[in-house]
Amino acid sequence: MTLVQLRHVIALVEAGSFSRAAEGLFLTQPALSRSVRALEDELGQALFDRVGRRIELTLFGGEFLQRARQIVFEVDDIAASSVRLREGRAGRLRVGMGSGPGAMLMTPLLLEMARHHPEVHVAVSRGSTDRLVQALRERQLDALVIDARSLSPSSDLHLVTLSEMRGVFMVRKRHPLLRTRGPLRFEALRKFPIASTPLSDEVARVLVELYGPAAHPEQCVTLRCEEIASLVDVVRDSDAVLLAIRASAPDLVELPMKPTMTGKARFGLVTLAGRASPASLSILRDLAQRVLHD
Image (cartoon, rainbow, N blue to C red):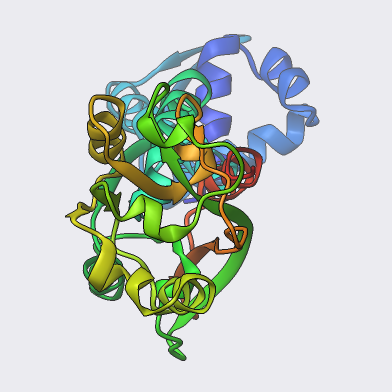
């Protein structure tokens, strides 16, 4: 018994005659007759009563038809699901995001999936790099979008760089620091609370090189939080100074610094090396490359 034979029986019932069914299947009538006869021989029972040129299902044939239709439906559904999965139109996507990428990418990703890929089940997790990497290794996540500089190199992780984005000091409009003409020295900023997400060792090194030991995040950051959106809200409503990616708070005012702030975040897409990724991951990668830029 083959799937082709099941399709032949279904087509024959729907057409009502061997000639019409053979025409619809692009077969000769003798070829279709041989296929059905071989199936009946294998089953040991007739599926059809031949009444002149007409055919009628036997009692067993009626039961066989119901089960054949269910089998063919399931097979066709598996094939369709495979196509949807391969094209990223179904399945699931579990993404972990660091604070910076999450602030800029999470909402656009959810909107993209809701509008254009409604069959994909999406789950976004936020947290520190260490926690997200652990979840990736435990296969609770499919991919991460994080600051690559906060990631310790490892042979089991595959990293693709997405973009580099400027880090700056920002304040609300009408902040006292904006009354000063010209670039600001770092000492002026330290008169106010400084807010930041946890920063990588590389960013800390750049800050110390530019502004001295007092600029190390452990020394100068007084408001630290994993969620940059919360820090932005605080800076909007206070005299705190935000150290973050410029694009994460477009309504805040960038402070001109002397020396010029040169620190950058390098955002990357991280997956487990050697693990097959869901097709929908390409949607995330393309969107991240469009969104994560200065």
